[in-house]
Amino acid sequence: MAPLQHKFQLDESEMPTRWYNIVPDLPAPPPPPLHPVTHQPVGPDDLAPLFPMDLILQEVSTERYIDIPEAVQDIYRMWRPSPLYRAHRLEKALGTPARIYYKYEGVSPAGSHKPNTAVPQAYYNQLAGIRKLTTETGAGQWGTALAFACSLFDMECEIWQVGGSYDAKPGRRTVIETFGGTVHRSPSRLTSAGRAFPEDHTGSLGIAISEAVEVAAQHEDTKYALGSVLNHVLLHQTIIGEEALLQLAKAGESDVDVVIGCTGGGSNFGGLAFPFIREKLAGRMNPVIRAVEPASCPSLTRGEYRYDYGDTAGFTPLMKMHTLGHDFVPDPIHAGGLRYHGMAPLISHVYELGLMEAIAVEQTECFAAAIRFARTEGIVPAPEPTHALAATMREALACRESGEEKVTVTALCGHGLLDLAAYEAYLKGAMVDSGLSDTDLESALAAVPSVAG
Ligand SMILES: *Cc1c(COP(=O)(O)O)cnc(C)c1O
Image (cartoon, rainbow, N blue to C red; front, side, top):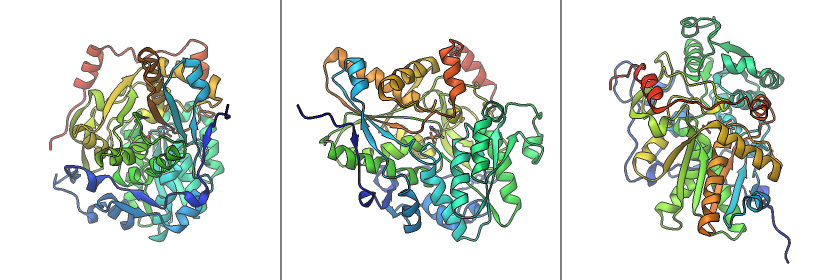
């Protein structure tokens, strides 16, 4: 018998050299962002105080492919192409005829997919003469990635970390500081957006974004970087799906049945899924595309599709997205990276077009899946992709019943070696689910004012 192949690798020379923009392939264009005050569609100039023009042009681009600059490719090759694994041992443990593949992004310097966009964002800012980037971070992954990227381009990086996460994860802060970044607990006393909340507030991504945007808007040489949600971020992440398609071909899989990813703001999911949706729209394969979100922050499955702000203070443009309301503060679940009130406008649009589906899963199911994964595949997943793993295992167990040999592909978008408090809570039996019954969630949402437009 031929030995089982576990890893499907690409040579560095086989790394894709273009990002894929799904916009021109969609049957309808996505609704434009609106100015937060005038409610008119924003133009490039409106975004210029926050982002360099190269990124703004990518944000509104209708080109199908955008070349990855040589300097960015060179840095990508420090860890890319990332491996695609076949989860043979997990399959065996589940007794499933399904073939489970996972694309592992935990091999990056920050331990997640976030450097795929942090590096080009730092690159384009440095080209534009910017000296410092500000940002928010929830779980800490994005702050780590941006601090890493800024260190390579000799730029400063100032980060507002969601208070609850700042308190619970001192290890993250140390990694960010090792890369040369500065970290503030959010809400901080440094901004008016932060001072609107008591200093001991546990914070939210929405508040931390307001703080970082406020500081960037006040300084000529400082711009803001966002780690998810925006079109250019999803664009940069498509290298994940492009590599996965090449690796699946090497594995002899010309057809895929299910593509599964976790969604916080939507970037690792979009990065994996968009190239597969291109194949689907072109009739080359017909996978089900499934987003998985936490039951306590169910923007796609329970949110309204309407214009809303990206931050709590209402500084950002209004974006049409599935939203729980810009001042919705989700339960402090362990998957900090999934606690965002809205979904990427591009994912929201693709969802409305019926090109994908979404489910919400409770965190104990996710961690049960993570433990099973760790004990078979040997990787401790970040809390966020445990959602994708739980959904993958549901699919694999359904295949055990039906006997179908479905090919599933998921993004294992980060490792969890800095998230051990979550594992400790689960292993001690101290982890609780959102417990949000439908009526509780209804009243939590009713308390959130909506925005006109
Ligand atoms: C940031 C993060 C997420 C959530 O962001 P997306 O934009 O939805 O990908 C998920 N997983 C990990 C490991 C992250 O760092």
